[in-house]
Amino acid sequence: MARQTSYTVHLPPTGSEEGAQFVPDSFAPIAFVAPWAWFPFHRMWLVTIAYLVAMALVVVGLAFSGLPSLMQTLITSGLSLLIGLEATNLKRWTLRRRGWREVAVIVAASREEAERRYFAERDTLPAAPVALTATRPATAVPAAPLPIIGLFPDADPSARGAR
Image (cartoon, rainbow, N blue to C red; front, side, top):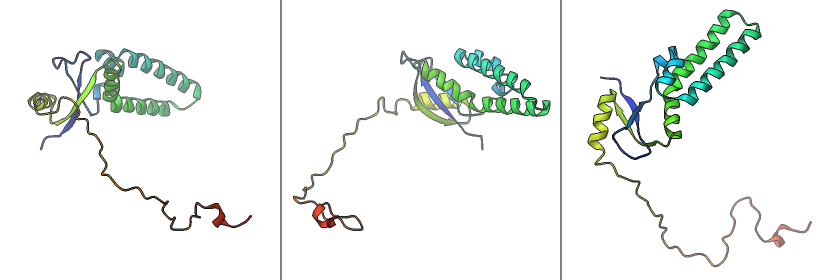
């Protein structure tokens, strides 16, 4: 059985489905190895700048920390692993910040299959969420307050006793 991945479907601010983006919810190996290239390739300029500044601060901080070089390498490798795991979430954040709308989540074996499933099923999906109105059944409101059962004192201050 093929490995299934969930893809989020994002539509541009214009609402046109022609430029829809399908973002997988998976590990990005290129972002793990070379995030300095992966972020600009996906036009994530703010994330690129934040990554470069953060990594420069980490590298300078590690250089002055006096840690052994093996430990410094493990720390930077762990940060690269974190970037690889969160790269697609950063892409979703960038699209949302630019006004793109997330309209669907499709589970498929490949991006092509996700595109086929989305465009085949988009006519059956509701165009807009249906507004449900909450209706409560009419119930009679008791005229007197209900008695309190349990360890709570009565609402009547005279029942508490004199202080």
